[in-house]
Image (cartoon, rainbow, N blue to C red; front, side):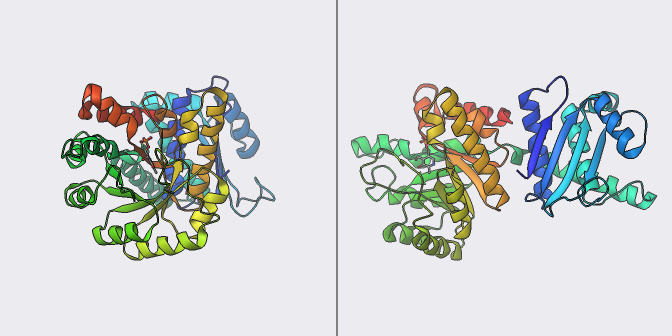
Length: 392
Ligand code: PXP
């Protein structure tokens, strides 16, 4: 577990706050290219940090943050090489300082985490004025980057418009048009459009794909089976990315993830062919370690974690599938894969998946198009966006 983030404070912070701070820490680790190192972050109260301060630094009283680098032999003997170290933060001092400075607790926590990470990486303001200024400058830079890239901290919402085409195909005419729907989704804030061009053309047609290539401003993600015919179309049209899915003619929708482990040779060739033509590839897989490792072995840029089992279950079973998604997202990110997720997500079950820090994009179709029938497409998109935005 490269990032362990826990609270030992006697009054546990709200789970949503913990998730936000964990997300800040995960962002910092990516920023420092340290996602594969082991870091432990522990939140404590003033009494606990004062005791540690006394024991290890012979200083009296509480402080805001303490970093123990694994490379510092005194504090951490016998640490494995990939261990970066431990950051201990007093939530009491953080809250007090936030109030004094007129900052939010989130902003103060970000600064403390950044400060702690810089110490782990060898920066030390106590060495000299020059180092102190360099460290302050780096902290300012990180804060600015964090603020500017705010949208990266929540997953982006990509909308699958297949089911607009399903309604059109029911009568074989021209309406409703998925190309118009895609434009409305983008106007409402969607950051990507997804379409699945199936072998049987049951919903999306080649005409839709070609027009969408010309009109989509955000990102066009073509979902497809790895067949010769569809690969040729993808290479010709040039979507912004491709998501490879298993496709069975008689299924209602994509039923399971790709078996990358057993289809490695064939999939590796398809991934290489598309990526050699500047089309990044995502593999739609179940949240399983072996599938993730195989996806990385064959050089995929992304994995899309199948959320179907999580979405289709309840109670304990759902929690189990959520834990699997969390572990899978962490592993994939550690291996350098970008992580998307989707299938069966709706207005009730999306928040918990959106809160997984490593997930960069959610692909949602049926629930949004279904709700749009009653409330309109723009409102349906905005409602889902607000769930995603507030999930962290
Ligand atoms: N991701 C993939 C790979 C899919 O096949 C689908 C279904 O087309 C989705 C996401 C979206 O699933 P849903 O329509 O259930 O939101």
